[in-house]
Length: 179
Image (tube, rainbow, N blue to C red; front, side):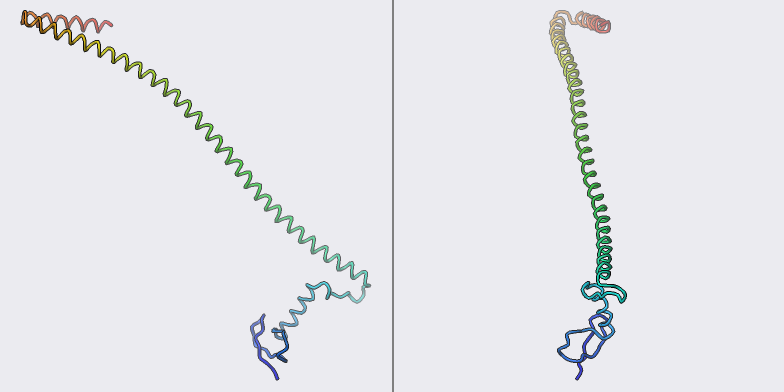
């Protein structure tokens, strides 16, 4: 009696000999799979016809050494690449840290310079404002005195007071022009 099953590799239908058969591969796939398994398994390797047992062992060891060398070389290449990438990342981080510190230092220096220059200009500006304020106060007091004097003069002599006031203003403007 035969049982139909689906091959795991080629997905084709094939007949099994019995239900106890655990192989789910058709005859074509099973033979190629067995060859691959034998190549991978070192214990299933056999010696060649002309070799002695020692020669077969050395040949198998040489093949294993070649495989290990190939694995080691690929590992070193990948490690070299990853090391280069890690070094590039660490160097990049170090460079950005240095740039950030330099930027902070430059910013502090600029702020100090600007603040010192601003303080100097602020002192000059406040002194000029103080001078102008005192001058305005003096002018205000003089004008108030002139207005009082003018009012008293007008009361005494209305026409004569206007002429006197204009003469006084002319004299005052000449003094300001000279200084």
